[in-house]
Length: 237
Image (cartoon, rainbow, N blue to C red; front, side, top):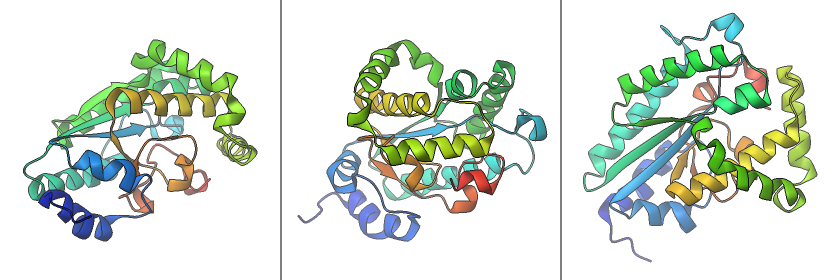
């Protein structure tokens, strides 16, 4: 089908082929149709800082988070300049419950980190929205129960093994199944509530299956991915 939306044609033939860092997910099925709309919603979840004891809970100076947010700010600027007929809504979500409830991080450290992240986003992406996953806690409960009760239908042994290995490398005493249930519940809730295109901050394989039917784009180079993780060994798991 010939693309009649000039903004989407530019994105599809010029911008994304040049800037993608991994193959998109549900690109033809969901991303392109959503880009054709006047109002476009992006969604980017953000993990807690797991090495807060070493780096502190406050983002400062030349921290990895600053570089990543700076790059995402440039992405939005490029899109606005070349898709002037579109209105972009970008929702960043601090995954606070993953830190406190699932991985046992101190609530104070997690809270301070996400307050600092919100300040950073306000500086580089002043029109973006920042939400905490905990604000969706009650709404997510039915989705959690559905996924937990039908776990085998949503996942497989490879996914569980990968999540378990990551938890071991991170040194957290977390339950891998609980993490997977939370990720899938999050994906279903966000898809139903916002119908967004996810701009992911992690490697593509880390989103496989747990992001369920969320359409996803990958535009961050490896060195800017997952800035909340403490070292490269964990980022690649």
